[in-house]
Image 1: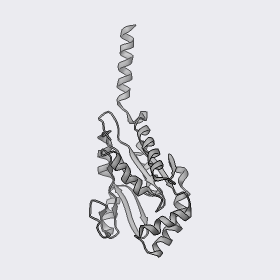
Image 2: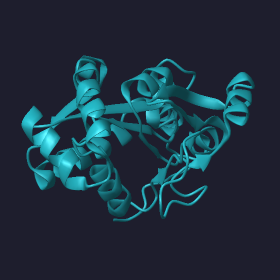
Image 3: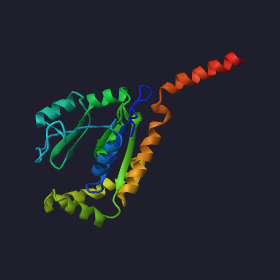
Image 4: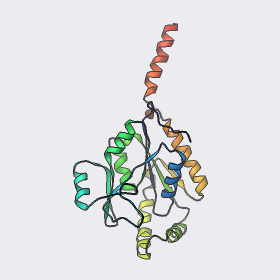
Length: 218
């Protein structure tokens, strides 16, 4: 797809949330492949790197003290404590991207989503919640990933309903019963929201120019 960044457009903070296993990570990856102008917000975390993960690529891996210091200095756009570790989104690169008309994609939970929506950048957010077709399918997907122990899977399942209960606070909600169909709907939503009046500051000058033309004809 042709890159969609423009000096005449403000960037979007595109938020994808879902319970673990509902498909937000896969949809996020597909979205980044669809439009290379999109950038992924690399979160910071205090958990240890998993095999194959690199600092600055999957996450910025920080110590507890470094993370707390960043929060105290207003360096995190959002942050949360999940499964014994801190997670957060560094503010500076997101602010820069938005000002340059570039969209930033967030793969975060409902707590982080609400913090961003309620922040100074909240008016430029697009929030989308991904629901699974069923709880049984959600558990099957978690098991098939082969990444977590049975204990961790059980904890994720226990947390899933709490996450799902916040679906009503999102702009859009998609049921991921078919990946391709869900992805098509996701692309449509992003494309339409980029044309939202608020995201196009150049429209004011354009309308003024039209008004001047109209007055000159009078």
